[in-house]
Length: 456
Image 1 (tube, helix red, strand yellow):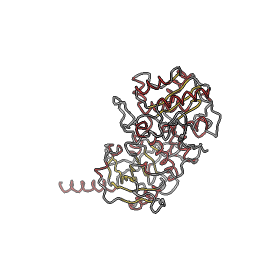
Image 2 (cartoon, helix red, strand yellow):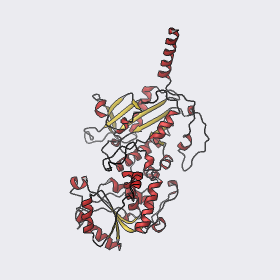
Image 3 (cartoon, one colour):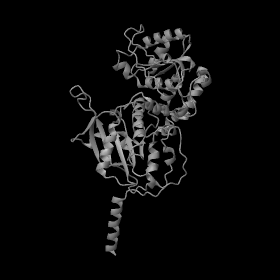
Image 4 (tube, one colour):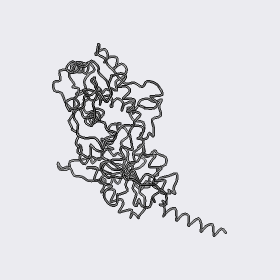
């Protein structure tokens, strides 16, 4: 009897080690992963998961100190890459997994739970998925479970790649695309990345990598890994990229960049709050603003006739910009002088302010803007604040700025850049969008942000 039990135990161990996934369960998400232009394929579940041969999940994360708006840009780099990669063998069933949001530096409301937040908290993930095969993290957990993961509750990550820059990026004055394994790398020194703190992930291998080049170089890295792994049909692989901000855009500002960006529509509850605020406080709505906003982003077309609400919007960056970028960041008095001048030029009486300024700084700004109708969004209740969180409040700020008659931003601020992009999509004239606060009110020796027009 004991010998029989021993044999059974050995057989179970062999099964666990050689057959990690069962391929007989239903693929409920297959329908929404069509990459056909402007068309979703119709498919009825059930469909054998076995028809999704060589499924690959690519997880990623960004350096923890980086902010909300840079992370949005990193997503675009990877979404364009994944969309193109999915058209090539053996990557037809690749999925990009959106990393849970940890508490970011600018999310100061310590009384709110702001850990492990899904992207659906801030964005319309279904809209994003019509551009590229992406999964929110909870959707990833559900999707991979359909393969009958036997290591439950753990998900094995075949290899985690921690990216670093090369020390000399322009060797002999030339920039070459390349990556190189760092032999001396201790995993224990890099476990602060939020993605690795997800308790259900178990990293099998951890590799430090110097990386220099566009996001497409990741395709070579993944293909190399698959060749080493001798991937079998119906096998499932999970890879993770840490410090994904190291990878560069392949073609920044081109048609695919803008298609990915247009697909990143905000979560409907945040859009609704911004619309209600504009109507209540700024006497404005989409009909009066004449912006382009069809029900789905695929229906957007070249458009330059948006008018905007009857107010000026200004993004005034303070905090670390005021301390570390004094050569380009205006004082509050200088900013107020420029705001007054622009309002007089445009014959506007209301200014909407988006800022990370402290309470004292806001009081001083109001003093400089006496007899000006100044507005700033604040949640109407504790319940609304708990609903939208700090990230949602920033998005509402961006939405209100995006719908203004005229906008002025802060030099080299990613928050400002995202508003520029949103206004390009909505169809404003460039002269009403790509404006920058100068260091000096006289606007002498002023540095301006770059202009990157939308491409269809």
